[in-house]
Amino acid sequence: MGQGDDRLHVEIDVADHAVDVRVVGEVDIATVAVFRSALWAAPARPVLRLDLSGVRLLSATGVRALVAAHLRIRARGGELVLLHPDPVVERVLRATGLHRVIQIVGRCADRELVPC
Image (cartoon, rainbow, N blue to C red):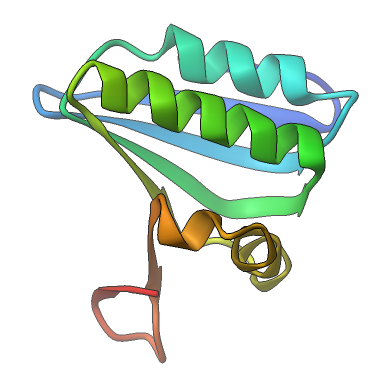
């Protein structure tokens, strides 16, 4: 299942235990509605894995959408995991303190997935 506009594209894959959401583009005031809609449309599963490797920009509105998604998923007993954030996006996550609240997993020197 895919959603998007010219600046943001979101793909959702649903499995038994997890939902994988891949986001490509920029998450800002112009595209956050598509981003938020995709996160809300994802079916309830124990884990929502959000692949941010294709996100070049994460604005304050995107951060707020992540926090809201994290709280919503946690309220139903699930977990939000952020995968492979671009270095620019990872700096935003660290600057806002989200790395302390939401698990971030990435690749370090082409090794297996490890917490960042």
